[in-house]
Image 1 (cartoon, rainbow, N blue to C red):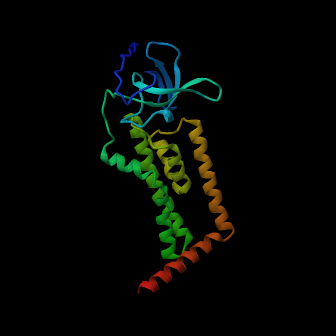
Image 2 (image 1 turned 90 degrees about the horizontal axis):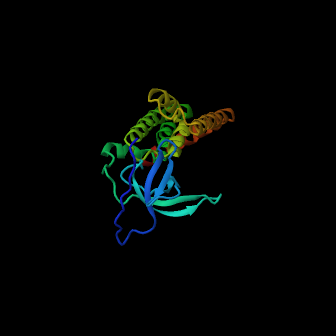
Length: 231
């Protein structure tokens, strides 16, 4: 096993605080441990405590950090950043676009609302939502796996769950099997099925209480009035 060595970092006037090397890192769970320069006790580091950089952390990276403690009084590193990256890499343009699109989840409801307004039928809009959002969710899963493989910053799990909740869960279910991605993390799978259950319960309630029909009629009437206004 290759032994990690830490060279002393020459600080600039803007850099201060303790520094060390990342000697342990679990990228799937997003945490590891920093060994301070000169040796000593290791400090816990969570990925949320790392400033964004060209790529995700890996064993051997050197960090400046602020030393704090958690609620149990255990030492941990916060506000950590890498003064030097051995490899300079940025996400390819089309991957940046796709990753950025995953944050704009309000777009998920626009195609459905437009189709409901045009047709006056809630079911038609719902079918559009399931098809469009499932396809997009498949793309986001594929993108997240790509980012994971090349150690780029990932799509936040909460973004994936929002797309799943907004009728994209059939696509997520397909992507989990097709790409072999996000299948083993228990907390993620639990949240995924919660999204599925909530989605089904809400849609069932809308149909059972006749709210789906009311929404279709309301949006259909509004669309008709807009058409008349601009004719």
